[in-house]
Amino acid sequence: MTENVRKEIHALTAMTAGQLRQKYIEVYGEPPRTHNKQFLFRRIAWRLQAIEEGASLSERARQRAMEIANLADLRIRPPKGFAPAVANESAPRSLPAPAQDTRLPLPGTVLTREYQGKLICVTVLEDGFEYEGERYKSLTAVARAVTGSHWNGLLFFGIAKKRKELAHA
View (spheres, rainbow, N blue to C red):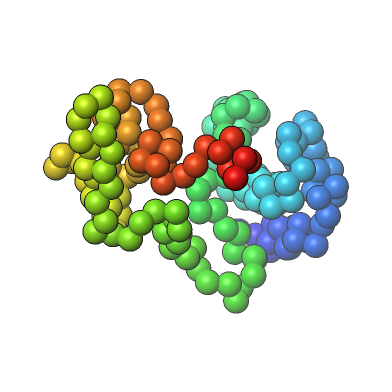
């Protein structure tokens, strides 16, 4: 990345959301669909780097890349895990592991529910759930396997209450 682009990206960190919206219009030629400052920053920084990296391409390849890049629906967000090099240098390089959902019981717990006359038993694992020897990433996936339709897994197993029930409690 050239020093100019690095400085330009660093300057983005001091901009307000309104200023980032203006910069977005300069860079993309259209107004953004959001006011989210972090999203605008990442999107603009990504675009500035993408434009710079295209400088070594042939004229034909550059024109084709610009045609593709100007299609608004091609990529709405920067790539997952994108973090510009000039962001907080003292920040950790990797994202912390997501905390386990506090609504879920501890690993090893067996959740049971009767559904259409059949007893459903699901074991909570460290990284998901086990039902009939199959592993699932979420209770919703288990509920879908059991019922064949979409259910909120927490509601299906009685872990969470419906909003109506919470409002009357």
